[in-house]
Image (cartoon, rainbow, N blue to C red; front, side, top):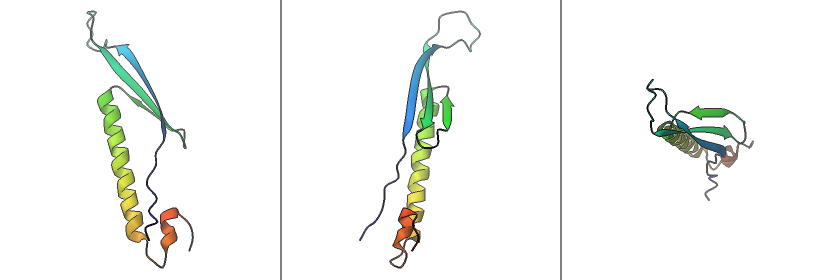
Length: 89
């Protein structure tokens, strides 16, 4: 019997476009996408200066959640199946 509960993350994602004036030049520059994410359960907020940073954060979250699920599966035994659900035997 497989009682594996998949990892789940929920975020509120905000995206907006800004002019990039970091180069110190008054010339028109290509707009840059900024992002912020709020964890739906903890309300912790993360800000990102670009899409690459956002994607890196999401990738790290998925890898961390997958590794935690793997550890839960390894710790779960027929004598203690509730460990996957955080319950007590």
